[in-house]
Length: 223
Ligand SMILES: Nc1ncnc2c1ncn2[C@@H]1O[C@H](COP(=O)(O)OP(=O)(O)OP(=O)(O)O)[C@@H](O)[C@H]1O
Ligand SMILES: [Mg+2]
Picture 1: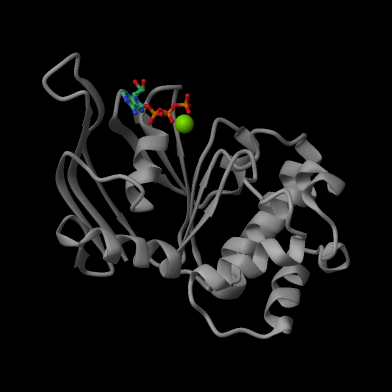
Picture 2: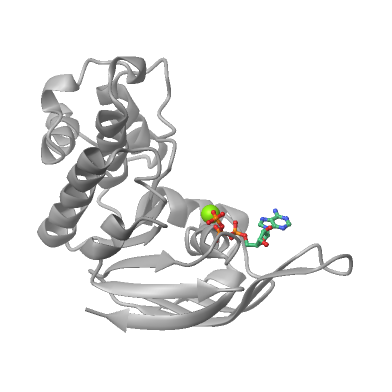
């Protein structure tokens, strides 16, 4: 599904260059559940941003479902993002003035999808918070808010879900719950998940572990 070849990302080209990614090559198959780990500054977020078409590489190739991402226009990129990719963030990034239900609904509207009320309620149910549909983010715990953000990502039936340190703000009980919910969704819908993390708990759930160091792949192990 994803093929990265000799990917490089250099920030500040021509000035004080930072080689955030340095010759990264990875193949990711549909249905994988993988984490990217490594020290702070090793390039995890940079890699996720490129995978999510939020940023482009300085050189190298990125194929998403056989399409050469570097040759796509801005509007094609944003189309891929809206329809094929779901994002989960460390700080949930829910819209504070929208309820759980409306936050999930917004993601369908942005993807120009036809949908029924049940689609939204099913997504909330999948992550165990259907009864919180009418709550606003401020009325929910961190773990509950993160489950809304998983429902928001899932409701579009994306091929790929990217999560940058999804458990960083959660205690271990909530982090376990979040990881279990994502694993279930991975198994139920065969959605591909890629996480970045520092958290051993997240790593214990992964089926594949990629370790970055100074922008290079140090190890790539399957369990
Ligand atoms: N917009 C930017 N401009 C310049 N340098 C950047 C930019 N974003 C990241 N960097 C640098 O690129 C390198 C990789 O950063 P990145 O955020 O990908 O690391 P990370 O592995 O996600 O770290 P952390 O675990 O702290 O989140 C770092 O040296 C960082 O300082
Ligand atoms: Mg990061």
